[in-house]
Length: 591
Image 1 (cartoon, one colour):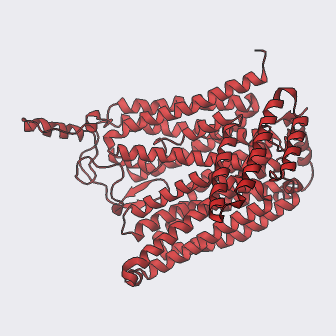
Image 2: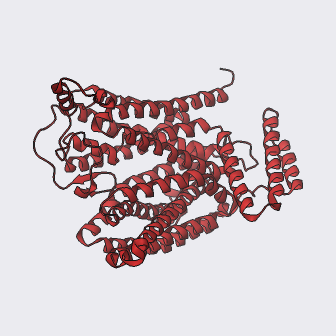
């Protein structure tokens, strides 16, 4: 008996998910065949894993290196890095729906090849520009009164942003669409491929920055650029060959639902076909959706008489609007929104949390060890996901993962009020002049009470001057840690990192759950645009957590940021609980 995907009626192909028992029987039969290992190595799954590993390794190296390069270029200042981060987040936020729509409207092989080519060539050209700037920086600064340097910075940021957009398109195409088809719409195999891809991502997230960091440290930034350049050229060739072979040996990848036609007659025919193919309960919904598509086609024909620039802008707005509407009408909308809310948090191994750890006297070597442990717990989360999904089903796996995630984060909340916590709410209020001068000095000393001295200044921000820092992918390592006073107690920081590390088990299990829900429940013709909007939502919520830190930058504020982060995460999981309740009611309408 097959399990039918609960896809939104949007004119796409509604697919049947085969039962796990049938697939397991085929798997056992394949194991008995001699040379099955060779068959696997030449099969589509292994080729996707290798291609994904090469792509992820290159992405991780580049994301780490470009941040370091921008800091070095601008005199160890954060301005270029901040501009780059804002441009990347803003571009995905604005163009996520456009990228997804492009993925939906074009053949799978063309999308994958074009994204792969644009991404790797952009990184290659950007690396060449950086090599020239590092080699001839003094000479470049003297041309056009220094404006050539500004041009080079602009070119670097634009090329890096284009590479990130192409990487987003490639991720949507391969990890959200291709693997669904490759697994034959089997839920068990789909869960296994999702978990394996996430494990590869976790491993490369640790090892790739270490590799390129060693090259840059032992040689130079120019050699580091050359290393990344060479990697991307080799990776481009290998990935192109592997993806082309996967496309050839999986004929289903060449079959894709046609895009919406702009002709009125085709639109009317599509509405009639859709109405005939739906059951009575969803007939009205299908009719409304078909009429929506007809109105889109009519609007597209109306704007053809406008000037080209206005037509392009109108088409851009229409595509974004319809993309967000498509995202909103998905049955898994609440689950996707819940996942996006988890991005608004300081409870991770990013520069904010690790910068706070330094103010509390945690050494760089210990933080590196903690990062390794967190990677292991992340891998445990992927293993737990596959086990729970098989035992309790996908929706229940999300509920269990949510509860585990929230339970572990309670340790982080406890750390805010535990001994050794530097939280001081009085810091949020300005100090007023007092007749008693000792009162102001006592308040200032109280604010410094639990703060580990970094450079002898008061109220040291979470992100100090990076001129004294070695940067790795997700942490900072100070060259010279000051000696002197130590925190009164390490209970607070221990509880914080204990919560962060253990929470990653539930976090990655929940992430995989929502990812598979999106894969299973979004119809094939809208898979790209909906996942593009999901990427936009993720970037939007990620921007909010940086705004939070800018608003409260001192270590004494960090406890407030922890509480706000937990509130956002709780809201996200509450959205998932609402989705799960609706899904269960739909499965059992009489209960």
